[in-house]
Length: 435
Image 1 (tube, one colour):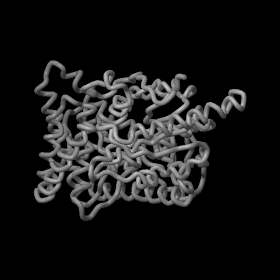
Image 2: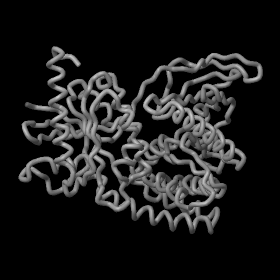
Image 3: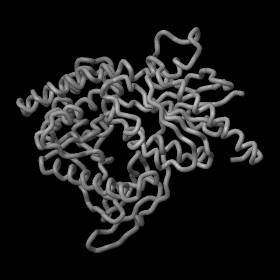
């Protein structure tokens, strides 16, 4: 019998709209929005909007059905308040941010300035500049060093006032079109957007260093040939506040070391587990990151599994939905060491379970809590609570602590999955092939 096990990380989620986006109130102003969002993330949707005849953006935080209703409401309110507070605090510091026009507390949405016409996304600007100055690398680097140094000063201003952005990437930074044309940048030339993960931290240098580390990793991923960009950013950061810069950059070095250690095992999550499950003579000595997807087979008891190891890279995510309809078992791998990403994994898991080709089927799901050999690892009960596994009602699930590098815990997990896939198939056959 050939069975199908899937290794997924998912990002798209569709829920019904619940906001009346055509409200007229003299005290609040007048606005009317498009019915279809132009962008959607894990937490919110963005709509083009007219507010008092000005081009605006409505950001709506939607309900998460997998979370307890009271907890979900509390998180939405807290994050909306933190976002508005972060924007306003930055504005007080003279940092370029979108103007907040209106906050609707009952429906948890905000209306803010649409900067599309007067700015360009920094990621796009860098790529355009690279193409236009392909024959003048010196000028290309000079312009970007100046831009990145000013960005470092801006981040320094935020951190000095304990504002942690939480998602610093070149996609969440904008550059003034006028200044792009003149090739002359000031601090006001750079706009910061998407404060959805922003919070205030008065004490720890750790979160400020993580803010920088996120930026560094994003640059390496998106602009891997621009090592000088982050170096210049740090120069600007240190120049704004020497004492703060020294503390935060020392902590950044510590985080980099932890990150390098983690990178050694980041590529030994799904793929390394899959490698361990194969016969010894079929195992690979060297594990490399998955590009696109890999198809592998392994056996357990009376089952032969055909496993699709799907890449988590954004450009390959559109492949995933091609494999949902025939899924008979799901293996979901969680990095038990990375506490920051457990929350993201939770959303990804529930997005998977809420997909139309999965949600009405009683497909069993096995959660591997990987890397338990490391002392920083969360326990299975902590992972279970963080993922909200107790809320799964319509299918059998099991969490198994494991180590992808040694194979500990893998056999027990797959044995459980084999047994429950068999039960699932028998139930399908009992009901005439439909479940």
